[in-house]
Each structure stands twice: as structure tokens, then as C-alpha cells.
Image 1 (spheres, rainbow, N blue to C red):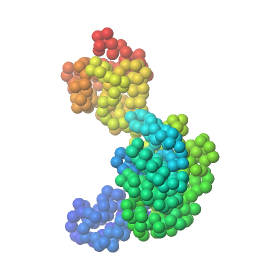
Image 2 (spheres, rainbow, N blue to C red):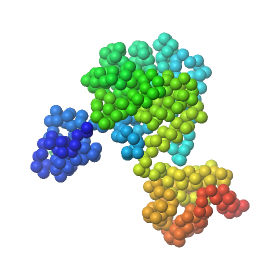
Image 3 (cartoon, helix red, strand yellow):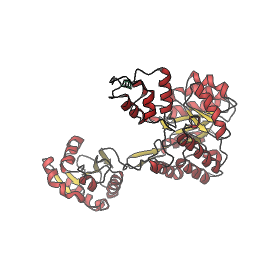
Image 4 (cartoon, rainbow, N blue to C red):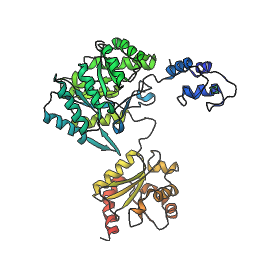
Length: 454
Ligand code: SF4
């Protein structure tokens, strides 16, 4: 079980009214430490031994592991609950596409292109796969290195290097060490050979065993050597074993705070399933049942999009409304005479308004105001979509510089803010739009004509 605040307080030096940690008492500091709102190093009076003990005891039960760098950084682990409804799942699993160095040039090019092309815009978010899993199968190190170089030059996506042969694995690591690739697999047979090589240029490693139990000595050995950026593969042989093993690892980490299994996992539907449908169903189970990285044999729009949407849904915080960022969104290619609509930043509202505007074939600006994820009526009720606040947002948004007219369409359901908004935006004409977004295709063309004088 994680350490309690009272137990942490007993370990602190209790210097009277010292307050150098920024808290009024040692007890207050202890409580903040347990809640994750402070770090042990803020108290300068702890011995190294107690500091290490507290850091270990207060570390999250599932370690946060980072694979990749820059824009392609993928963070996995650090989960706090077994069931999503208990709180929320935090770090969505990375989705990887396998490429073998035995595949022909054409197939490799096609797969690299798919990683770029298969990106989907949904409610203001870009959904896409995250990593390439590059497999050494040819037996020719030069060929493998060529594949790694080619993928690195063509794409910024994260990299997993898969090779049973240590020479090929670390030669490939040296090509892309700056991209923080995941090295896989570290096993009981290669661990001693791998440890010094990993330490030369540390990147995350995938630990593979024949079972959950046999993972334990491997992760313990790596931890002894200070190698803790680990991703676990318990070697599950089929769908049911995968479900069982992922569940055991998650429960051991969260319920027993069992450190040797307190790492995110990797799953390979590409090797387990017999066909494409089986593979995507296995991947779908992995999204729900705890995988940190899911490796697929290939990507296709039909299978990837549902998987990405499922991932988005499962990893959305159930306590928070899904919101998009405040700002000006362009629908089509709006010009300085195009209509301007304003709405709230609840994703569903934006999705409905933008889809209906697209359907109208009118190019327009949609100004999305931050209402903390509330719809327009609820946002108005909560004072986040009042005439004053919408007026202040419009002034700050920069839309005035982008159009030569001064007409703003507000949602019909909050027609009551019109007067207040006209006062907040002198010189603007406030147009009350339809009550339902679905009526926009009938409303916008006439408005667009009036703005162009057509
Ligand atoms: S700095 Fe350390 S000793 Fe001082 S109040 Fe904070 S926890 Fe206590």
C-alpha cells in the first residue's frame, strides 16, 4: 500500500517552524508529499537515506516511462486506477506499426506513407498512430540499419527497435539514440550482455519473459543497475493469456504496490492474432485492458480510426467535459467578408457547429470561447457565456483584424445575451442565429450573401 501522510511525517526532521520547504509545518509538507503536490528535495534537512526511502515509497505505483523525443514524445504508465470509472486513465497507449527489414522497398515506403497520411481530425484533435516498430529479421545488419535510417529520415514518429540479435539492436540504437527509441527485447538470456550497452546511451527498454513471474527477476536486476525506464512483456501466447497477464500486472502494481511489476506494458496483437479482424479486436482489448504500447502489423483507415476513437474515449477524463481549445477555427477558406459565429468550447457543440457549417458550403470563422467544456446554455447559466465575457473574448481573439465587416452570429438558445453583447462590442451587429446547429445550412448562405452584397 502507498505510504500514508502520518507515516511520512514521522520520517521528517520536525525542525520547529523552519518552513523552508514552503509549508508551515513538517506535517503539512508530509500531507502535500503524499498528495503529489511537493517533492522530497524541498526539505533540505533529510538524510540521503531517508530521502531515497521516501522517494521510493512515494513514487507512483506504475512508473511513468517516456519513449521518443520532441513532438513524438510518448508518455506511458503512471496510471492510478484499475477501472476507468474510479477516476480516469491518464496516458493513452501508443499505437505502433510493425515494419520488418525483410519487407520489400515498396511495402516499406507504403507503410511510412501511411503513418503520415492516416491522421484524423476529430473535435479539434488530431488522432494518429505514434510509433514504428522496426524488426530485425533479415539476418543482415546492414539491411536493418538501412531501414532504421530510412524511417528516421522520413518520419518524426517514435521508434521501437525489435531485435533478438544484440549487435543489430545496439547498432540500430546508435543510429537513432537521440530519438529515445524503445529497445526490445531484453530477456534472461541477454540481460547481462545488454546492461553495459544500455548504460552507454540510456533509452527505454522492453523486458520480455515467458510469464509474469519470470519478469520479476529481470526488472529487479535492471533496477539494481539504475535502469528503470522499462516496458513489460510477459510473453502472453494468446488473447486470453494477454488479458490475464495485463490484468495481473496492473493489479499487482496498484493493489499490492509491487514495484517489480510497476511499469507500463507492451502488447503485440500483430504476432498473436490469426487474421486482421482478430488483430484489431485484440488491440481493442489492449486499449481497455491496460497496454502501454500496442503493436499492429499494418495500418488501415477502417481499423485504425475506430481504435483511435476508442482510445480517445477510454482515456478521456470522465469527470471533465471534453473541451477544445479557445480560439478562431476556420471552416473552409474564409475571407474578410465571411460570416463569424461564436460558440462554446464543449467539443460536442463545436463538432455540431463546425459540421453544420461545412454542410452549408459557406466558408466561415467559428470563434470558440472557453466555457470550461460547458455547452452554450449551461455556459451562460454558469456565467461563462455571458454577453460581457463573449464580448471580451471577441475583442481579444483578433477576429476584428481578419474581417472587414462587424456582424457576429450568436447561438439562438442564448439570444438573451444580445443586448449585453452589443454594449460590450460597440459598432458590432449581433445576429441571433438558429437555436439548433442543424439549422445552420439553411441560415448561413443568406447571411453570407448579405455580407458580400450578393
Ligand atoms: S523544511 Fe523540512 S524540517 Fe523544515 S518545515 Fe519543511 S519539512 Fe520540516
